[in-house]
Image (tube, rainbow, N blue to C red; front, side):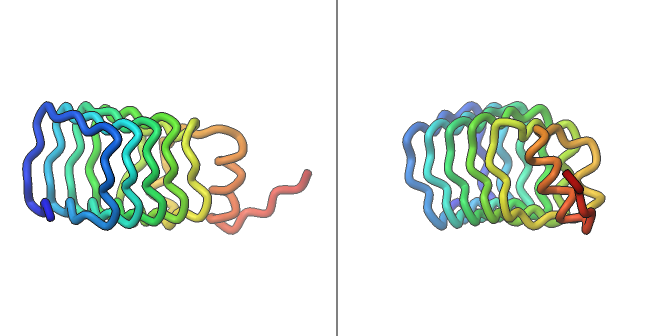
Amino acid sequence: QFARSIFHRVEWKHCKMIGTDFSQCAFRHVFFTTCLMRYANFNASKWEDGICKDCDATEASFSMLEWKQMVLEQCNFTACELIGTSLENIDLSSCQIEGITVQAENLKGAIMNEQQALLCAKLLGITVKY
């Protein structure tokens, strides 16, 4: 368990982090590449100037997270919890976000593709006619 730890200039590659507790951690200039993060707990953590690429974070918890200048590429965030986490300026367009739990006000400013925007519209109770 890594709760309340500080990670600075760390590179995680091909790591199994299933169910790991990273709550209240600080991540600065940290790179996650092809990591298995299912069920991990990142609640109340701070992420700054990092990259998360090709990671599987299915059902992980990212609630009350603060992130700045993060790059998210080809990550699986299916069924993740993002309660109290702002997605402003976060580009999710190459990621999977089906079934996420997020508050409407935290979607403001998020960058996503058309399919994701339709998913989020459904979360907001909007019916889209084709």
